[in-house]
Length: 194
Image 1 (cartoon, rainbow, N blue to C red):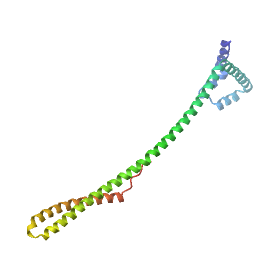
Image 2 (image 1 turned 90 degrees about the horizontal axis):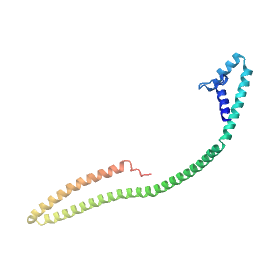
Image 3 (image 1 turned 180 degrees about the horizontal axis):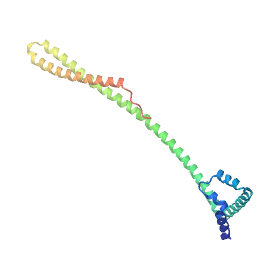
Image 4 (image 1 turned 180 degrees about the vertical axis):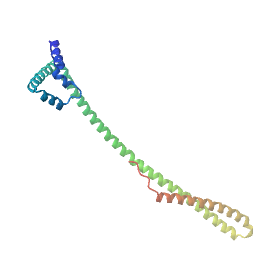
């Protein structure tokens, strides 16, 4: 019986009337124009109706013969949809967890960056204050030595030399510190991580 159905399907496909439909670049308008031109419309309609009926029967037989496979595939598709839905739910949960972790990491990171900048500025200010205190100490010592007269002139010269070195370092540090502060004030602020 299977061979009989296959033979009828093959004869249907080999029929000259249906051959036009199997061509890749089948054009409905051209086919209709040829049918009208040859004036065999009723005959071709009857053949088309017979072919459609035969294809319907063949389709029905194929569905009946393979209904278990088709049902299994439909069930497989439903289970795949379930798995896909579950995966989408898990992906959403994972994305939410990543967002929560990001907020837990980014905020402390931004605070640390701000504190490091503040600490660097405080260290620069402390260094500057130490240099100022040393310069004040040396200048007071120099004043005392200058009031001591000529007997303390060598000590005064030594203090003056130390004071000159410290003032030079102080001046260089002050200029560098001022440049850093100026650039931080007028440059674009560091953007925090988001």
